[in-house]
Length: 210
Image (cartoon, rainbow, N blue to C red; front, side, top):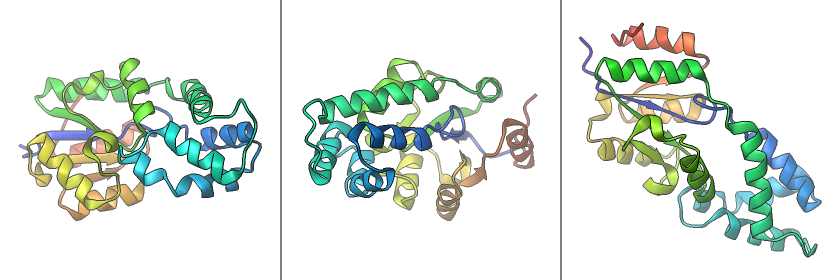
């Protein structure tokens, strides 16, 4: 019998498609700048946004000023609207195999949680479309923990919030650096590739579902 009580899923790249490679080119075009220029300007503020210390709109206002964008229609608010529009197009399709796995894990008595790096406006949007409904009270984000992956302290704070020891938790993510960081504080960490492989990896940890 496994001593593991809790399974933590990432969202983008696991439950839903990760829109990162689509959003930045779209926003760069909207601002009339190159993707490299946008990424360099946004990088100055990204950690404060994902840690919930700054809204995405505030960050885009600073980016617009840094890049010298003077088009009247381009504001932090309008840029967030474009960001959300793009995000909606590519991140609302959920992986039915993962949803089924979550249900099966609940059926065998496991606590199921999520931990995602995100931005305040994106967190609110995902909440509004029910993306966190699979996880009940255990929906965690960088914006509400005020720490982002791969900071090891984010995983310590996650375990504390769940109320379990790291060794009793499985963390699943498609980002190798995040998986390694979680493993470093004692979590059972799995690099996600697809649902079938995940079932095999969970079985190796004595977590057997269908």
